[in-house]
Length: 270
Image (tube, rainbow, N blue to C red; front, side, top):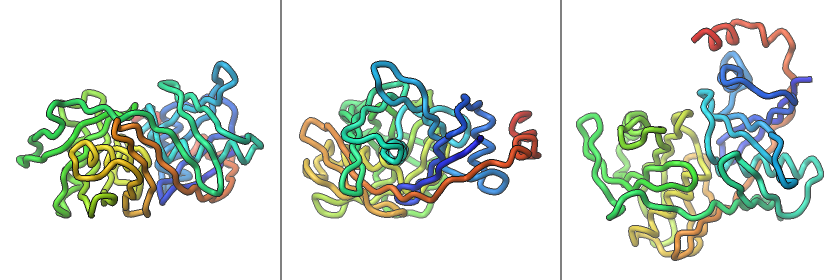
């Protein structure tokens, strides 16, 4: 039976695939389509993992595979606890192992150390005739945290910066500004998804960039996104963890005829 479990973290929604078999990229694209499919910002596909760990493949809605997703890992952890798994959990994404813990209604994810790509970290880049200043860093997946003045043009810039030549595997883009020493505001353009209401790894990148630039103090930081606020903690050495909610939406069983519908034909021949 082809079943999915859908949940969101601050409006960033994922589908957990319960169908058993391996998914193909075009099937992910069709599933994530918000008009002809189920709709989602990505698909989490449980995978076998060694050493008794829990494995997951994190699919972007364009059919590409992500190295990491903060919200996706929170949602996958909640799915595991709903199946009887208790205590701290180690999830193998296929790229790294991530510690997660569902406790007291919130899920904590240890995101690892943020690593800046450039020295000095703040660098100017030109895109679409605009010069933007930002910090490129990695949290296991690529990020570009752009200093933002609140301009409405961030979506167009995000779409172009995702494909900037500096990022051969594309990048997530965050448009950030600081409010005091322990709070940031961000707009999110995700690689392979476009504009999203929230992103766990993006919030962590924003907080880490603020600490790296001296705009935020190490310690607890609140990152405000369009979907809500996420609690992030950054150490002086840029080790990062996040703790936030997961809201279950429910289960859905796919009608067998959907697999031969127009959307499947369209995306499989694109």
